[in-house]
Length: 115
Image 1 (tube, helix red, strand yellow):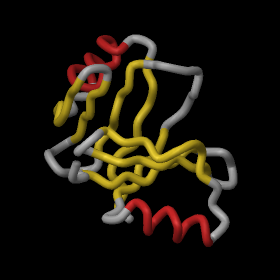
Image 2 (image 1 turned 60 degrees about the vertical axis):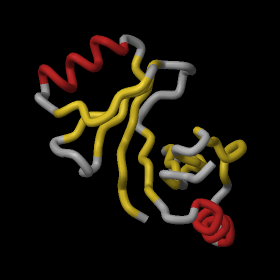
Image 3 (image 1 turned 90 degrees about the vertical axis):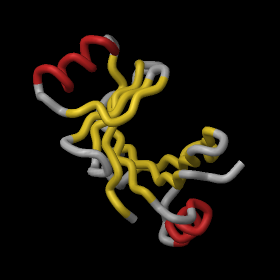
C-alpha cells in the first residue's frame, strides 16, 4: 500500500481551490467536476477537495493498491469492516472505504481499471 492522498469535503469549492492553490501555493495536479487535487509536484501524494455532498467531516486518507479485491480480502481477514459497496468510476478507479479503530475514514484505491 502506498499513501496516495488525503481529501476533504468542502462547502465552498471555489474558495477552497483558491486557498490551496493561491494562498498555500500548491500546484493543481488534477481536476474534474466537483473534485480537484493539489500537490507540490506531479506524482507525489496530494490533497483532494470534493464538493460537499454530506455531513462527513475530517480527512479521508487514501491508500493505493495494485489489486483492490485482494487487498480488501486481506484486510477483512485481519478484522477490518468495510462500509458499503466498492465504488467505481468506470475505467478510472475502484474504491473501498473503511475506518480505523478510532473511527477515522480510510479508503483503498485501485487506479487505471480496465473497462
